[in-house]
Image (tube, rainbow, N blue to C red; front, side, top):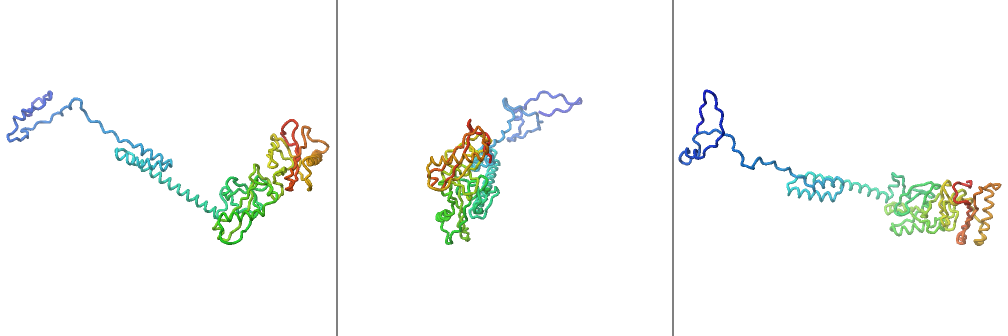
Amino acid sequence: MTTPPPTDNGPEPAGPWVPPDPSHHAENAPPGGDSSPAETVPAGPPAPPPHGSGPRPPAAPARTNRLAIAALITGLLGLVPIAVAFAVAGLVQAGRRREKGSGLAAGGLAASVAWAVACAVALAASGGSLLAAEDGSDSARPDGRVRLSTLKTGDCFTAEVHDSADPFVDPSPCDHPHNGEVTAKVALPSGPYPGRRELSERARKACKEHVPSNVQRAGDDFEPRPDLPDESTWSDGKREVTCTLLYVGESSLTTALANGLPLARGGAGYLLKQGDCIEEWNGRSYGQPIVECTREHEFQVLAVYEMPPGRYPGVEELENRAAEECARRAVKTWPGGTAPPDLIGPAVVVPTEDDWQWDVRQVVCLVEGKNGPLKRSVVPR
């Protein structure tokens, strides 16, 4: 088939396209098996695709590995062991499945490393401060607490009752609520460092000589808690022990031990003074719950005084003497019988025979309300 020559009237309209005849090509093929066409055939439109076929859809994008995502999240949260496990598993799985996410897994590992470094720095810093506290080089802290060894004899403080190993305390004026006081500063004899246990025993014996007699009668309510030098301080020639007493009862101290208030069992006047309001007598002979007198309270202290020494007269005799003396003190408190009419009293609390043997002879005079708890102060201070 040849290309038709052009006509004078221009190109004829193209008819329907007919596929070339393979047999025609075969007949006109040159001998010798040359398959080259003898004549040039114009290119026609492409053959239509087979039925049901069409352009191949684009390949689906690669998924992001879920373990890699989990590695990044846990790494940022500081869950270092979990993040490392997720990251390693995510890298392996993403490579096998040809998934994305290796960068996320690497990010999780990097975040884990950063967290680990930060924790190591924090531990090193805290460890250094603890060592400084042990060797005595750090005597104060930003929170205002100080080392016991920096306090002087007679200084008062508040300490953690349940942590005897903590050498830091909160200094406090002795007329404010507190639970401890420095009783002495004792230098131990020179010699090789004896070890912690032996040093504690030596300090206990040395400090016992400086315990006030009134505290000795308090039994288990006061705990000796000396601050000891460590081995490096001892080697530097500093062998001073700070002797302290810590009150472990249910109430707080509000005065210095040197004031001589009885702290023994049976010493009912312990820390009580005229005008104090007692919420409810706690059944013990000391450490009563003192409250503001504007709150409901069972008793108010009329007076606290001490009976003269001598042979123990017995409870009945003591109560009779105390009642007479408390009545005289009531007259002095309210001259001319001007005491509030709604009061009962005075009631008396006297020392027991055991108290008397310990030279505790205090009497407490109390008043209470006739019609229930008091709600105001009725005793002038």
